[in-house]
Length: 347
Image (cartoon, rainbow, N blue to C red; front, side, top):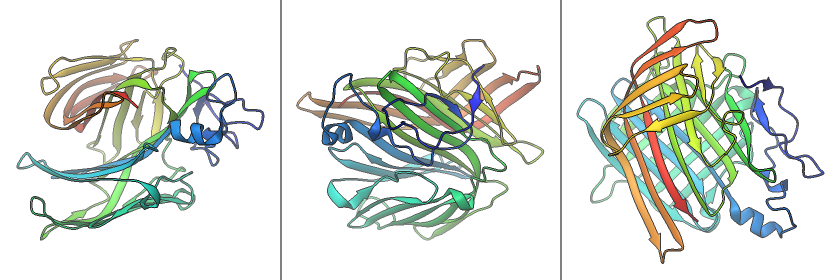
């Protein structure tokens, strides 16, 4: 079982050593650019180019799911915002790609912002973790195929009540992988066309995914996450990932949350074929055992002269299974709404 440590002041020390491990709170100074990247010195501009950063939110309501990201790949910035109506099983999406000053990913999430601002598409994440929340502002115009979306959402990440997943793992000893994830209440409202959807705090969950990583040129990941309110009004959720990290028994982002308490898990393994057919996933010790039934997916492919390539699948749907905690208590997972993901990329 991974030991959750007190978070150091810096992710990377002044001598270039990296504080790998699992931590109690996000880093105030997530200074990944100070890591060496290679075993030999390289210019700062190249390290910045290799650093991939994003902040992603998934908002689960009884009737809808809203997925959104602001992603800085350095050769371009990208964002999507999609609306999935759980009652009618329909989905639509707005997306943009950009370069330059129209995109920013926050350096830290205690008091910093992410944004992508282009014509007709304005998405902003105001991170105020010192005050216990994040604010999402959405202002996306309609076009000939999609209706407008406006919104103002508060994501309630209170570190006094919720133990987030904060992981700094070694791709190599000089190449860190940093992620912060949580499942917390959310409130506010989103207007989709002429329909206002009120997000009640006692029935809406936000899935948070922050990442800063020196990805190698070729990499992959398999990911799953879901959450639900229990009968007692508390949130249960999980996060599983299998990726390029070799030592994924000791360094992974696998966890289960119940009522704000985190249980760190062993390595995760995934079994699937057709993306839209049922998946299986479980931890190597069997403590978390899941089945996933996709209801639809977000997917795209990029091929730029064979140099930059990406195959991305993000099905969404329902999870069932069980988790046995370290006291032997069984936590049932029944129709938790969530995501899975399979991504193979070269960039």
